[in-house]
Image (cartoon, rainbow, N blue to C red; front, top):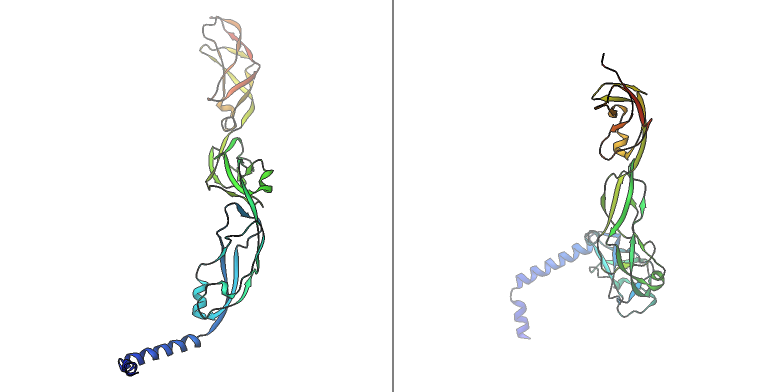
Length: 305
C-alpha cells in the first residue's frame, strides 16, 4: 500500500497535466457537432471456391448510413471503403448474408443507422470452362469510297469460365460494337468482349485487339468527249472524240477529270492514206480501261504535195 501511494506521489504535475488533457479531449469530441451521411462501400467477395461462380446480380456497392462527429464522418466520406464478404465454405445454391452494425469496421463513436441493400442474396453455381472463337461485331460503314476487306481479332479465341447452362449453347464470344465510321485504312482497335447478361469471365485476362482491314472500293466511271490525239505523224481522225469507261480504286478514279485523260493512236511508220487504228489511253497505275467507244478510229494521213 505504501509503495502504491509513493508511486502516485511521484510526477504528480505530469500526471495531473495528462488527466486534464484527457478530460479536455473528451469534452472536445463529445461536444463536437454530430452529423449524418451515407457511405458507399465496395463489396469485395473473397474465398469463393474456384469451381463456383456467382450467377445472381451483385450490388456494386453497399450504402451505409452513419451518424457521428463531423470530423470522423468527413474523414470516412473521403476514404475508399470496402466491405468484405467471405464466401469460404459455401456450396452451390442460394445464400443470404445479413449485415448488422457490427459487420463494419468503423471508428469508435460512429453509429450505423441503416444498410442498403440488406440482406444480400447470392446464388452460386458450378462452373465449367470452354475455349470459344471471338467474333468481332461491326457497326456503320467506312468512309465513302472504302469498304471492309476483313475483320479478325487477336487472339482469335479465348477460354472463358461460367455456369454450364450458359456456356453449353454458346458458339462464339462477341466483341463490343466496333465503329467503322470514316475509316480509310487498315486499323488495329483495342476492344473488349461483350458478355451481355451472361455470368462469364476470362480464365486468363488478355487484351483484345481487332485487326480491321479497310480498302478502297472499285469504282467504274465513263468519260465522254475525250479527244483522240495522233503522233508522231499528224493525221485527221474520225471520229475525233471517244467515250472511255475506266475501272480502278475509288480515290483514283473519283479524282480523275476529262482533262487528265489522253486518248491516242500511234501513226508511227504509217504510209499516206486511210488506216484503222486502235485507241489507247494513258492511265494512272491501278486504273484500267474497260472499253473505248469506238475502240478503233479512222486515221487519214495526207499525201506529200
